[in-house]
Each structure stands twice: as C-alpha cells, then as structure tokens.
Image 1 (tube, rainbow over the protein chains, first blue to last red):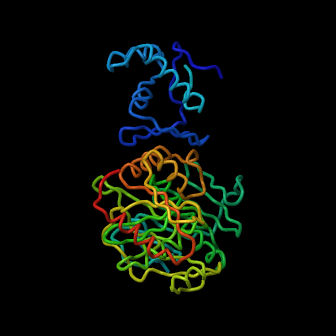
Image 2 (image 1 turned 135 degrees about the vertical axis):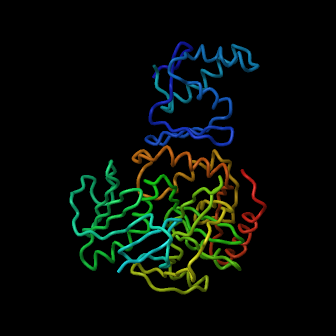
Image 3 (image 1 turned 60 degrees about the vertical axis):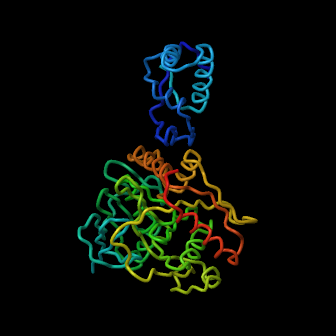
Amino acid sequence: MPSLTLACTVVLADQVMAAALDDNTALLDPVSGEYAALNPIGSLVVARLDGQTSIDALCDQLCATHQVEPGVCRTDVLEFLDSLDRKGFLVRR
Amino acid sequence: MVWTYRIGGLGVRSDVALPCHDQAVAAIDVAVELVSAWPETQPGGPRAWMIDGQGARLALPQGIGLHIQAPGRIAVAATTEHQRDQARLYLPGLAFSMLFLLRASLPLHAGAVALGGRAFLFLGPSGAGKSTLTAAFSTLDGAVVLADDLAVPEWRDGWPVLWPTFPGLRLLPDAAAALQLSGTPTADGKQWLAAPVPLGAAPLPLAGLFLLGPREAEQAIVVRLSATAALPALLRELKGNVGLDALPTRQALYAQAARLCSQTPVYRIGVPVGVAGLGAFCRHLAELGLQPAVSA
C-alpha cells in the first residue's frame, strides 16, 4: 500500500475500537489484534479524522490551535497517520 | 429442585446445582433452565459459539447444548443424569462467561480474594498457577476466596467493585497438600475447596489486578503496568472462548476494560518457584493492594 500523502483523507476503519485511557487513546482492531496506544496529541489527531478533511487541512487546524511549526506538523502528522495506516487502522476516502 | 444464588451481583435461579452457596436473593436476574430439545445442529462444531440475534449457542461433545439468551436466560439442553452432571461443569466457566459478555460485563479469567475490605484479582490462563496463588493468598489472615476462575468487575459510584462469583478453589492435589489445604476430590483429579460461608451484602472495591507472567520465574517479579500496557494484557484474560470481534457488545466491553485499567493498579507478576516463598510473596502483594487507593 502506498504511503499517505497530505492530500489524502482518512478515517478510522469501521471495525477499529477506540477507548479513552486517561489522556490517551487506545485503538484496537479486534479482527487483526493490532493495538496502538496514542498520546494526547495522537488522540487529538485521530479524534479529528472525519473522512472529509484532508490531512493537509487537518494540519492547518492543528497549527491554528497549537504552537507548532507547519512543516514539522505536516511531517509528524503524516508519519503518525502512516504508522496507523500500516497497522490497518485507517481507510482512505 | 430449584436453587437460587448470587453470582457476580446477579440473582440467579437455577434448575442445576452450581458450585456456590444456595441463598435467598431479592430479585431474579438470570434463569438457568433445563430444556430437553436442542433444536439445531451447529456449523462451527463443538466448542465454537454461534452468536446471532438470538444469543449464543454452543453444542458440547456429550450431546449437551447451551443457549445463552442475554440478558437473563441460560437454557441447558441435557436430558440424562450424566449430561446434567457434565453441564454442571460447563456452566460456571463457559455459560456464565458468555452471559456476562453478552450483558456487556467483563468476565475475567481470574481468581479473586477479599482482604482488608478489598478484592485482589489474580489473572492468567489455565496452567499459569492462578489457583495456587489464589489459594496461597487466601491463607493470609482475614482473607476469603471470592472466585476461582471467573471474576466480573462492575461499577458502583463510578469505581470498579467485585461481587463473589463461584467462591471456591479447584486445586491440584500436590498444591493443596503443600498449602496444607484439603477439600473434596473432583472428577478431574483436583481438590475442590468451597468457601466456608456465603459472602457479601455489598461488593468490594478492587485492590489491584495481578497478571501472572512466566510460570517458572527465577525470582519474584512485581511490575506496575501503565494503563496503555495493561489494556491489551487484560483483554487476553477475557473468558468466553470467543474473540471480541464476534460479540455485539465489543465496544462496551473494550471501553470497560480501558476504564478498569485507568482506575485500578495493574501489575505483571512472576510467582517464585515452589510454595516456600509464596507466603511472603502474597504478603507483599497484600501490602501493595492495601495502600491508600489512588487512580493509576
């Protein structure tokens, strides 16, 4: 599967379950058994995956509300979402 | 004959005698009923649950059938005395675990002991030494067994608590002898040690979840896990012989497991080899669990 790009729009796959764990989020795919524990920023990113907003636009939102350099934000978010995509947590819209 | 029990906080009326104390209950939440007919063949074969909108069905090798109709009925297809005796063995683990899963309650593969007003849970797969550790812990002063193999936390006032389920222990004879405990021989060669008295007008808050690691630990190990590390480990100790993905209640179960890991200390433990050091190890776990309660 090719890596995600900033133009991609993604959402959590239907079977993936998410649960709050203090300030973190735990994702589990009960079919594959894949599990991921997200820190608060990762949790925030995943919470904003609505299947309509591109990754680029999502990064714009994050930059508007958090002190982060736009280039760093795009690199980090793309890398983070790519890691979730490789585990099968995401579907592309 | 009909028996009534309190199992994991549920009032149960049963046509089959179960390994817990017969006691009056204020309300019946679950009926365990003997039925004569098993209406369907099962495509998954023995020991594979078939789950659909009608509940969960399981055909067992001796011609016994279980049909779990949540929230409140377990139908047991068993017509002969032998089948009823066999069904009695399957009800505590298989049937009640599935009932709790379908009720969106967490049936954990755990022994549990009350001490100091709190419940200590010892989790692990069969053969991990859970019953031996539970038995050893139950020999501490004031300790009482709440469960051998199935423990089902629930929430009261926002915090996890535990009622007794099947309060007795099934121990290998050598473990029972080493701990100087004696019970009734069971059909599978173990010793059954029933808890001496009916327990609990109220559920107990949890002291901690203790996950058994390698059986032959060179030395005692106790490591507190973060909630994110504890969650997948806890999910592996869900009873029921079924994957989460097969359950209509999976999201609620997952959320509860996460909540449990957030609110209760979870430890990975390695039990020392042999029973000689078990007493001191149990006292150490008791001290950990009886520290002032704080969320993780």
